[in-house]
Image 1 (cartoon, rainbow, N blue to C red):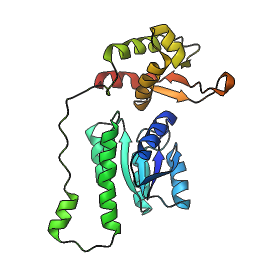
Image 2 (image 1 turned 45 degrees about the vertical axis):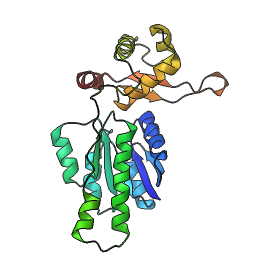
Image 3 (image 1 turned 60 degrees about the horizontal axis):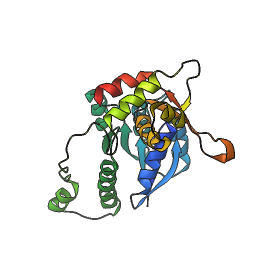
Image 4 (image 1 turned 135 degrees about the vertical axis):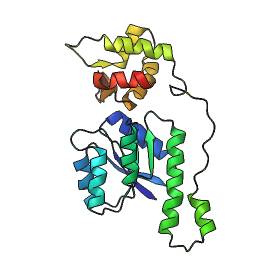
Length: 238
């Protein structure tokens, strides 16, 4: 079993990554932490094979963490899962030895592809086999990506609905900035369940920040906060 540590400061994104990871055989989530110092502390006490690592985190960034891990010669591999898409950041991540780089938002199939490829390489390296060049080339050569039509939004999300939600969120009173999916749904005229699908997508872009909570009767009622610093970049890239 390949042991994975999730390093992601947004709890909803971390939960989505944990759910995705649980759908791929041969991987288990050791823990989920929200900062580089927490990750370093855990790596000193537990055996971890792979990090799913964000770059944008408070304090020390994911790139800084990876540099520190290399300096300390910590034996762990890294797949970046981040909204950072500029070439300088990607170049540095790859030069530090990242085994893959996923740009948010991504579909489950892309993460599954990255994990499957990592598992094959992990087992090959850990297996102590003696390989010839032809076998090594066969195992290391990446499979060509499947042809897909370009999409700005994940399957099942509608551009017009997203725009309406963003308008409602942007106009939410700043003197009481937290809101729920039910409150926004009532304002826009769509169900709370549908709103949550869009909110999960916006959380993956860090446009929204989620705070877990519970209402009457113990029903989960999560609150959300618009992070305007991420809004413009998300709208430009969608």
